[in-house]
Length: 264
Image 1 (spheres, rainbow, N blue to C red):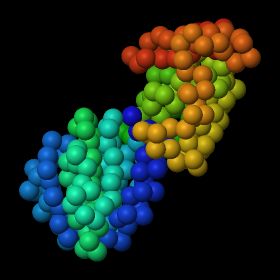
Image 2 (cartoon, helix red, strand yellow; image 1 turned 120 degrees about the vertical axis):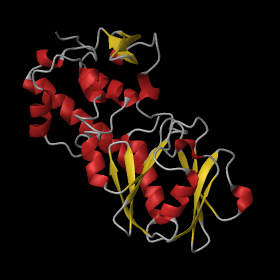
Image 3 (spheres, rainbow, N blue to C red; image 1 turned 180 degrees about the vertical axis):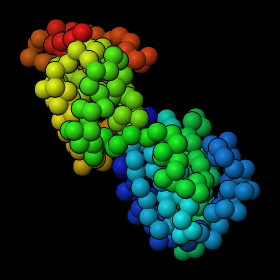
């Protein structure tokens, strides 16, 4: 599922393909993923609008329009963007497409239809409404400490809480815990400030590396984070411990028993 680094990659693609473009037409093939408008209403709202820029916040990508409104692209598990010019290059699972005045077409593909597309009159009000927290790349040490100190939930539960930290999902949460040697089921309230700051530092480091290397989530390189260690039964770093699977915060969780310490 696309998380912050992957959506950063989508933003780069979207900006190159769409910023400054005027939408001459919209073709909706399946409006299931368009959550707050019918297909015809969605087409009417976007046709003639110019895309002025975009904002990524966590896993959410917002396309800004010249009338002050915005288009939310939330990619779900299998959402994707595809720029093309000839109809024969349209992907099988394209749900809608923006046809630009210059002849280019930007399709939104989604085989499993878990994406969420919204036409927003007020982007910032929507961000407040869903209580989307600070971006995991931008959250300060002070904001992080103020948000998590004393919480009774697990470390992984906090990392996945989008109202605290926007952008981290299951795979990257496991990676952050692995790097800090903290068991994902540890209680946040039992950690010292030094441990909390280590979590913050590794979160920013993982997200920074991810965005700088712009992964495509359907084709990660062989040395990408979890490909290095996330395999049940594999020995831990330097031969210490063994990789195990459990459930934490309702999610399948990988950790290294004997390497990552459970606190609290």
